[in-house]
Image 1 (cartoon, rainbow, N blue to C red):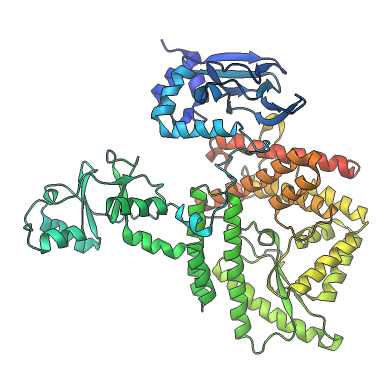
Image 2: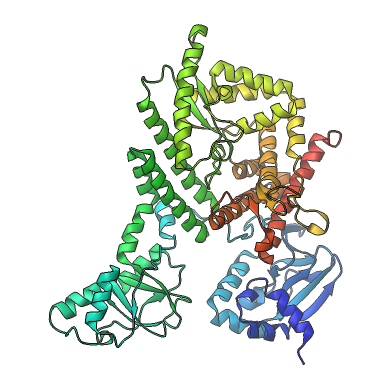
Length: 640
């Protein structure tokens, strides 16, 4: 008769790493040894200086605070562990006392995992070992820690990498176009099939398990030279064993492996060993071809592009580059910088080419402003166009003639951006709209009107235009507008409070019992809107708070929160958590968009694993915390 308690424990543990990395039998064996512990709120699981326990712990229900003590021996919470989080790993790796306190933040049930029973898996299973080592090294599990803010979707390592290094960490593009034959196939037959399939190698398999490989180099050296007859079985000339990797092989690994083993082909198998079926092949030619997706190469290609069709093809390579970065879990900070530069270069090239196609050069200096996610340097996937144009003041009699020129230019630019893949804005918030193609003085008047009128529509428009970045032209024009905005905002508490009310229009996306709030009707019924309910509340909050501090030239949401953490040390943890959550949610949306070939905005929650749902909920705690801060600071209860 099976142990039903152990089965239930195994079902729970199997949802979380490192237990999810174990085989079913191993997991059940561990679960039979687990101790189930109950703690009231405020009880110590272990304390600093205490000898290591014979167990490490995972939270089943409730929450546990991890605390360090300052010089005066006062506790400070550095991390919060909730459902599925592992802590207390020190005895597994270091024979020394605990360095922190672990105390229950609420009534909790913990599973205690015996070290002696689990340690063999950490040694023999590299994935398990790596996970535990990272957890041990960081001592934290979520975005609230100061030094290592969790790893939602393997997010944000505090590293600095060059663009070339980021490129090398991409997964290599795997070819499914491969030829497989049995060892008894004649060389002549194999060569004939290689010619028909137009491939440079043949994988020798038995029951689809790779036992050898023969390349065109082998044919030249052994067959063409007459050393071996064409009637010979191909198994006689194959190289064995085959060098194999899993599908996550990076470009750097592929290059090093080929140099180390003096080979020009690598076989891709299910588990990266020669013991499982062949899934694809990587050749030296594939790696050389992939060099075309290097950011530096793409940037040069954009600047040289002489047609919209060429830019569209380059855009496809940029998306492949993005997908590689996401798969490799490159920190979003680095991904965003590279993608912004490539997007910005594309916009510049389109504008340059459109100016060349105009009947005359621009009559006065102008600036093209990117708004929304591109203005905030957060645009990874191709989303709607949001842009505007400002031109130098001209005499009244020249105003409409000048505007007509720039409207014609903007129409050409937005049309070509649409061909490349940037959809037209449904609300026509584009530079081709006369409302958003204005002179410097007109823009200043427009912002004065928006800020002093302070209706809901005006505030919404202001929010969009507060997040602009110059993509092309004279930076003096956009700086003048920015200075005017801050001068007009000075002392205008009524408008700031209006912004605060707008920042609260999308409350925390969790309802009763921490359930996700999904769309209730329409085409997107039962889907979760991660932009509206997750990303935008953080964006709105960061914009409000940074404007109130009168900080210029920081438009990125995460950067704004990091700056706020410096300006308000007493709220540092909240702001850092929001910065982390902003990046994590954008990265999660990007993953979904790449997976489903769309904007990633609407998510089918049923398709997510339990672990991802829990991690999303942690991010949404940041929304609740920052909105509570805004309610208190700006006394918005009267307006809500």
